[in-house]
Length: 582
Ligand SMILES: Nc1ncnc2c1ncn2[C@@H]1O[C@H](COP(=O)(O)OP(=O)(O)OP(=O)(O)O)[C@@H](O)[C@H]1O
Ligand SMILES: [Mg+2]
Figure 1: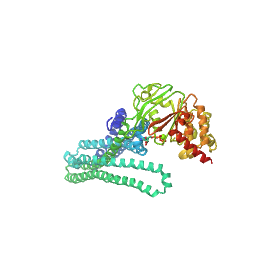
Figure 2: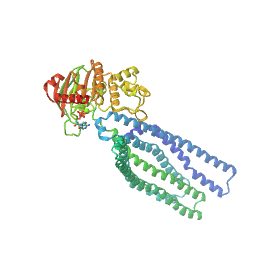
Figure 3: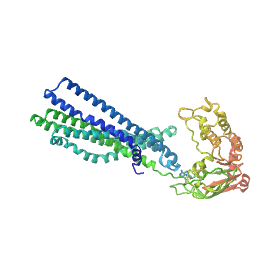
Figure 4: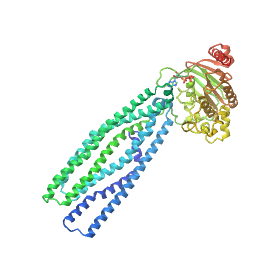
């Protein structure tokens, strides 16, 4: 797609509607443009005293008919184009959103939510304005201009007089060429600054609690103030230029009116032209000023939205990092997972997050992964889910490289409870039943029990229908974590992955959850990541990650016997518990 491909393809696919609308608008202008001529001949008849009552009535009816026809035709044309504009806006927002779900985590960590929001809000609106107002006004203005000039030529006003009067208007193309690109450049600066402000506002709001506890509101305000100032500065620069441009066009119109008054007036006094012709000429020039101003407006809007259109097009043509191969296979069941010599570093980072990991996980096995913070535990999971693309041939499920699998089938086989489970601003029930909103309440309740959050929920005012987030209740960190855990447990999938999902619960609750896990985990392949050894000690196999490498591997008793990192960590944690207990 080229820089403006999005808009072009939309216009092309809707061309019959555009054509019909343009025809309607043109037709409306033809009527409009005959007005001065009618008034001119009315004046002449008035001067020649040939006017009669029925002629007056006929003229009035003409004028009325033209007014009604103009409004009907123009209104319908405008409506059609406005509707196309709104549909474009709607369609583009949907496409942008679709694109968001296609793009990988890497893209989002690079871009920042505020910037992306700005695409959906500011840029799409700006393009829509151009294609609805822009097209209507441009068509309207151009044809009104052309039909006025044609009518002028046909109306018997001497050609030389018309030419002299419209000479000042010939400067318009030069003005457009001069101002157009400059306005566009300044608009792009404004759009970029707007995106920065949205990003800054989003970040400041997200971090407002931290800001407050650190008592640095003034600093935050100053930082936000700086981004707002930057916009003001850029907007003023834009407004100065576009106002100047918009003012110059009517000025040219006024000059041509003055010329026509001077030259036309003299000619009328010399009786070279009729008074009616003179009236018609000045009326024509008067009408022309409207479209001139409109054309100025439209060029302004078009230049501005051109910048936005480019940004939206760039986004829509962004290639996702993780893509399905053509003819991707469907994963029907997961019998075993084999990881072979897996090394990985994040895009743009030189350090390896994982080094030479090899691991075999049989169907129904429970594997525990422990390791210091930053040792690569979550990275391993992200690769299993293809949040990031693992190197070719390093991860296989049932013998098939996961890069050959369809993303949908891979991800629907895995129930994953992320480390920072995000909850949506909806009811607790919908949050838990996220993978399938249709599941009955008792299934939701069972998962809540398994995640040891049931007792908390039934004490909330609306129990499972309690709203969370913006318009509802705020959960504590531990409650949030267990709700997110229930969301993972309810998903019918063969593989269950818990990334540090019990870090914010006390030891008693943890052992309750572990009991449920043994129950649910029957026949499921389970991966439990934890800092606490108590969460993994019953696993069939435990691996200890250290700086991206498998440092130790075995069952709890084997690892204890090995007297390595695992055993040392275990003793330290046990000791901590005893201290807590005493
Ligand atoms: N999106 C990312 N981009 C670049 N580097 C990353 C990214 N996510 C993690 N890392 C780096 O990769 C390394 C491993 O991170 P990872 O999140 O896998 O650790 P972890 O073992 O899950 O730690 P924790 O116990 O704190 O959750 C870290 O050094 C981290 O800085
Ligand atoms: Mg982690």
